[in-house]
Length: 188
Ligand SMILES: Cc1cc2nc3c(=O)[nH]c(=O)nc-3n(C[C@H](O)[C@H](O)[C@H](O)COP(=O)(O)O)c2cc1C
Image (cartoon, rainbow, N blue to C red):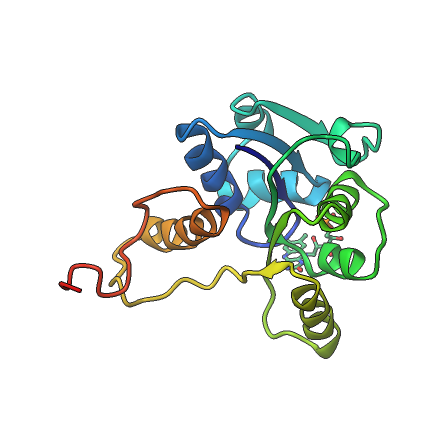
């Protein structure tokens, strides 16, 4: 399986970094793009150097590099995830604006009818963001806000992160035991 993973400049970049690690552990080929604010947030919010995670990927690209292979529909991949997705990047995609590699690859994913998962993080949400999310959802995009559930009785921040990452892995169709599933221990 080949996955494009984008990390944009919204709070919660740690989710994207953890997803990268989890996909790599499963032997999935990851093509990584991190926006400029995403790189700064990785450093300032999650204490992770972009250079440190970049080396773990199959390939990484600069967000300004519109000549990268993932900017073309002829590039073979299965799915794209934007985790977290800024409201700005969400708005651009919903309005067909492809002025950087992340938005271009997302629009390519949509036109090629491949799986696109976006994880917008903001609160509260205004009508512009909600309208853009509804528009994308109607077009088949999976809108998956990083909203951890508490039924698994999380004890550490890591449990909350793993819940979100595990749910995204589920949506990608990747087997995982990253989080406690709802009433999973009960006989069915
Ligand atoms: C410290 C910091 C935190 C931010 N958090 C968010 C956020 O949680 N959600 C969001 O939509 N934008 C957030 N922003 C604003 C975006 O980074 C900004 O709109 C930027 O243009 C997004 O560009 P990108 O999508 O290319 O990364 C934040 C900015 C900074 C500097």
